[in-house]
Length: 267
Image 1 (tube, rainbow, N blue to C red):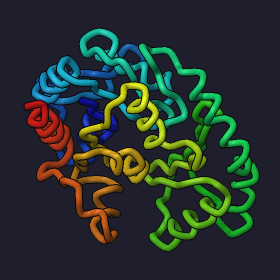
Image 2 (cartoon, rainbow, N blue to C red):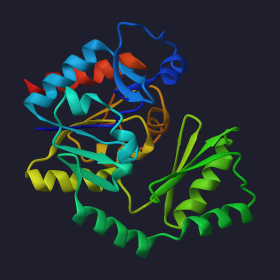
Image 3 (cartoon, one colour):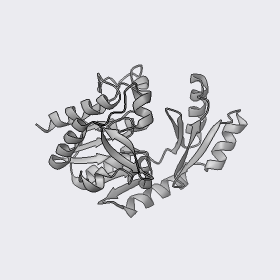
Image 4 (tube, helix red, strand yellow):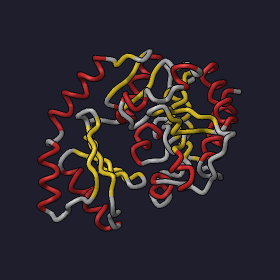
């Protein structure tokens, strides 16, 4: 069985995310990500134990918007929890035993060239329409980019940015203060589909907190969504998206609840 999940703010939480979601940082938490010699992301001990059991009995596939370099900071996947596949850069890269699959990367590059205007062109369109984004711009492996915003857009502004981006072959996702711009060709869902075809089995369950995660969740038999974040806010009013499970808990405990549900499916 294949279990797929987003990582940040779904199963694993940075110190900032933990405090933002109203929980204290405890010495009892399991550190999972190391950066510059410091532990920067965590999960509960119960979550860690459940994830380890799931990875031994099924195929656990991390599916993340992080670049491969950022994903590799999760030391648990190198030392404690075995994984066969991982989807990074929002689906632009599939890792098999830690190595990018070249055929997939080539396919994504061809689609981007056909379907998407350049980043410079997109930003010019936004500027022309009066959207001068206030924040620090970051690049992700020349695949997509995001802003760490100083001021969040209004609902109306966000909808207008979404529409302009889509017309030019890009999608937008607001996750906390991070506003992502990602080519439509880059999709977590298509990457997970490819892995399922390689294995000859379907994804039984998935979990994620952002609208970018719905790309792969819609192809899973069981879908779990933390009750915090972008996706929980967007799914409720959308017709046809009632077939998912919203966690009762938020933050770290939402991750624990999701992994318990994954574990229940094994039996």
